[in-house]
Structure formats: structure tokens, C-alpha cells
Length: 367
Ligand code: SF4
Ligand code: FES
Image 1 (cartoon, rainbow, N blue to C red):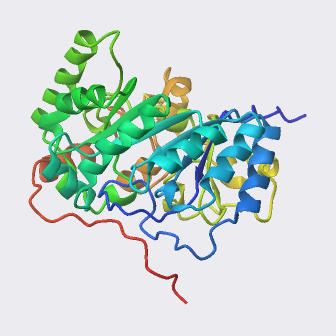
Image 2 (tube, rainbow, N blue to C red):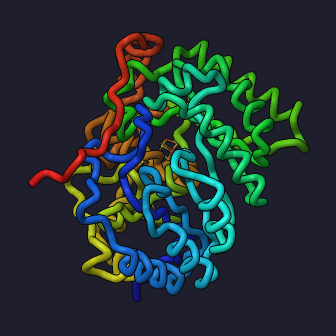
């Protein structure tokens, strides 16, 4: 008999790709979904019922910008009724006191607020939105006034690496209990913006040192989750905690993905929650099975003592850099494609002067 696949812990609900910001490292696909065809409220409720029945414990309400959905409070309330822990992942744009109160009343558990920089002008430029920085300060105050635990997250790249420490201090000043400092990952919109975003080794290392020092200095005041830059590491990270092991993503149109960038892998077909139950998808979908476990691994990973630690790294990064999603992640020093990564860094790091390609949702879906 086939071994039972352990239940997922988390579900990332990408409620919409619409977002007022245009961050050039957004993990959403380049072909963003328009509003037409987004899952309706009743469809999300059914998916959430199925998630709870499957054993999911945490729902991350994301996007795009989830505040753009008029039914967000209703969705939160539905999750709370199912006993699901809810985390709102937001840019803050669209939040106001009335909405913050309604979300609290509906049972929202936690808020994760993004910041782009500690310098206002730079933050607004990175976000592609004038006034974003000032608005985020207001929103952080609304969130903490409602008593939500707040996590601030910041993505580090060439334009803001010098202020990694200032962003930690800003998170503390905003009342966050945790701050996540993560170096940019090169998938989604970060691929066409790679040369603009990639820091030099010196910039990345200085940022890592500064944040590690703050971990010691601010211990007891704020928890710092520090995701070090992949490209400068010896081993890759265990992307998604391993493919099809812990979490699943549902796109605005209902496709179930093993990770946010999975649609870049051209030979995978993704089942849709409109056609299949979440349990069927999790247990039987070929896309989830494709890189689960170790059978798919090449010799380098299959015989490596770290195969159950990093699960061979990131499939989407392997595809982007080595042209093969089943290759050893080129971040790994054992990968035969590691040299390509070193070459890209030498060519692109710190050459940032070209304008960003901002992510924008098409005003209307193509007909
Ligand atoms: Fe991880 Fe594969 Fe590298 Fe081993 S060879 S460290 S399993 S990516
Ligand atoms: Fe797809 Fe890492 S983003 S496996």
C-alpha cells in the first residue's frame, strides 16, 4: 500500500494579484491574473473548509494585496470559525481604522506588514508608489492599536542593503514583535530586475553582519528572522520546507501550486480547486508529486547527506539558472551549474542603474 502523504500545515491564499504597489522583486508570476475570474467568496470558503478537513492549521492571506478584496473580513471570519490561524500579509495600502477593527472583530490572528526601506524616498521608489512609506507608519499604528501581533518584513537588495540595520530598528519603532530580513530571491519579477537588484558580495556581507549584530543587541526586544542571501551561501535553503511537504499555494484563479513560482516550470500542469478537492490535489496531483521526496533527485543530491535537510534546494531556481527543474540547485557548491551563478553575480551584482520593471496587473483581462 502506498504511504500516506502527511497533511500540509499551511495554505497560502493568494486572494488577488491586484496591488497598488509595484515592487520589482514580487514573487507573483510575470503574467498576473486580472480581477475577472478570481475565486468568489463562496469558492474560497469551500477551499478553506477543505483545508481545515485536510489538516491545515495556518492560512496566510496574501496576494497581491489582500486588502483589495472586499470580502476579506468575511474570509477571515470563516477561517476563525474553522479554527484556522490567520496571518494577513499586506503592504498596508488600503488599511484604515474601520477595517482594522472589523478584522479584529472577525478574529484575525496576526499581521505581517512589508516595508521597502528605512529611507522614505527610496522606499517609495522601490514600491513604485508615492507616499507608501508614510502610509505604512500609519498602518503599523492602527495594527498595534488593535492588539494584533505585528511582524515587519523587508526584502534586502542593492538599493537598500546599506540600511538593513535601519530597517530592523524601524520595525522595532513601529511596534513589531518580529522582523523578517530576507535577501531577494530571484524568481517572479526579480528575474527581469535581477541586474537592478543584485547586491555586490561586499554589500550583502555587510548587511548580514549588521543584522547578526543587531540580533545580539536587540535580543529580548524584537525577534529577528534573518534569511541570508542564497547566492552567497554554500548550500541552498530548503525551499518551501521541501516540495509538497508542508504547504500549498492557491492562486487568485484557483490553481494549486507547490510554491509561488511553480508556474515557471513549463512541463507541470496544475490542478484547480474549481475541479478537484484540496485532498485530491495534495495527494494525487502530478505537479505535487513531481519533486516530492528524493526519487526525482539526480545522483549529486540523492547520495548527499543533506538531501533530507535542504531537499535539493529550490526547483524554480534550478530551472531559472540551470534550465532544468530537477537539477541540483546551482546555489549548492556541489552543483555542476554553480559556476553559472558565480558568473551571473560577477556580471550583474551592483550594476543597478537601469529603471525597475514594476509589476502591474493589467487593467482588464485579455479578451
Ligand atoms: Fe543539497 Fe543536493 Fe547540494 Fe546535497 S547536493 S547539499 S542535497 S542541493
Ligand atoms: Fe519554487 Fe523554490 S520557489 S521550489
